[in-house]
Structures are given as structure tokens and as C-alpha cells.
Image 1 (cartoon, rainbow, N blue to C red):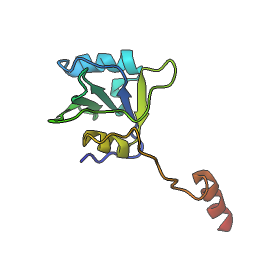
Image 2: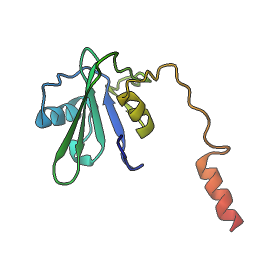
Image 3: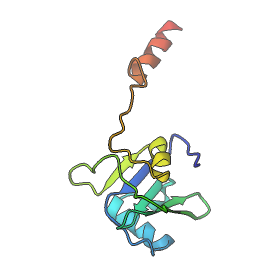
Length: 129
């Protein structure tokens, strides 16, 4: 299980990547496919063509960290398609955890977490003080 701070963004390449690539090759794929800086500290996820293997690339101030996952059965499936003109999908840490477990998120629905929008709730709390 990965514990990621809420400030970390997670980008998943929607295009298949040759996972024989190492640190530098995946950093180059981050720049070209995802169009982000690999030294930003965010998590960059790459999936192979058969969708049974995944690599995560993260910069942690002292160097790159590479996490490699292989499913013995089944495939990885993204919950959403990339927006028009994009080659990646952004997800949150909870979705990444489920994806790493091999859970198909296509039919999953997210329940409403707030009775109000978060910024409205903060404004209400601040006004009450």
C-alpha cells in the first residue's frame, strides 16, 4: 500500500509504454507523453501494451524511485478516457490503490462526499467563528 500526501498528483499515461525502459527512458516518456516535469515529485504511471504490467516513477529529492507491478491474472483498466487532445489521465491516490490491486474502475461510481462544496463549508465555518 502506498501512502501519498494529498499534494501529490498522479498522472497515468493513456498510451502503452515499453516497460523495458528504465529511469531515464520513463523520465523522457513523462516529458513527451504526459508533458510534465519528472522532477516535480508527482507520481507518473505507465502501463504496457498487454496491460498486465505497470511502472510508477517518482522523484523524491535524492533520486528516482521506480515501482514495478505485474498482475498474474487480469489486466489494468483505467476508469476514464483522456480528455480530447490529452495523452494521459489524472487520478487520486484511492483510485491508484484500486488500480494497483487490479480492480476495474470502469463501472464504479463515486458517492458524494460533501453535503456542500468544500469551499462553501469552509466559508460557513469561518463565518461561524
